[in-house]
Length: 98
Image (cartoon, rainbow, N blue to C red; front, side, top):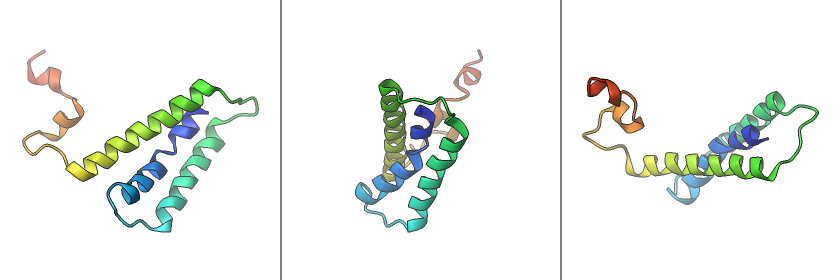
């Protein structure tokens, strides 16, 4: 269930782009967001799936925080002097010779 709710992240980004960034989005953005949730749900949810409060909160919380990160990155941009792999933190151990 948490994976299905985590798939709501593109839909949450579309909503945040409208509300926070005042960008216009098309109906296709919302349609594809819903299709994403349905698609992941069809793959992940089985006949014995149940509702778990912790899983629901984790899925929605993870989708919300990730969507907020994407939205704020769209608003502020990435740091100018930072290389692309430095933004995500990858490759730091190879730069220091470890």
